[in-house]
Image (cartoon, rainbow, N blue to C red; front, top):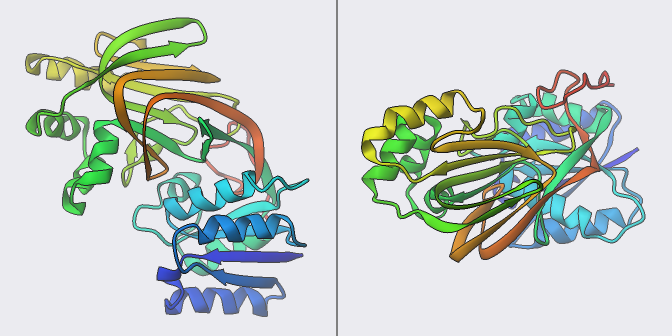
Length: 304
């Protein structure tokens, strides 16, 4: 079996990466390495792998690298996609962490080349695919425009998140949310559409999400007065349908129509659109994760 590691160029010189590659090769794995140089390389290399005799593609990098390789594979117009593995090398590694992929690079790479893949869903936002979480509004604006030390605060408690929203005087986005069985006009501060569960360096936005259930989990925090902060936090900690300020849905698709361009982060990659249709693509790819992956609704198979 031939595996191909598409490695983010920023990590190519790391001794731990070189050692991990050498170790799995010594164990008998045929592992090719391709290194990215500039934007778009990862997607191009992923497309090439889909049209060549490669049985497994491994994204070596952070959530952004996973996103780019995924889009390259699914847009390759190939008869069949290789199985997809992850070597987590980013700062946050939100998706890999929530899947339970080992932090030790040799263990993670060994899993990626030898583990048994399982069919999982991906999300799609217009023409873009995402593996983990699409966040809109305040969260996307923070990820795109604020310093790293401020972004780290997003991993804290709900009070911290809401306090930051009020502190920067973030203006809510006015728009219309269309669901399979309902339609809502709203002024939203935060929106998240999860195939996976966490983003922003550990902030859990879709706690009930699974990557194999055929559904997207949707979190919306609407505009609220400061004296209702406690109520908002309580709703965030006890998500259940439509609350006064917080809503949580599980749906196969939804549409968001904003009065202006809204920043959206897809696995950490920013776009800005007025209208977007999110939908789940069931069993779109074969993903290599641990047998005990918390994001599987059913127990996964044993790894090789």
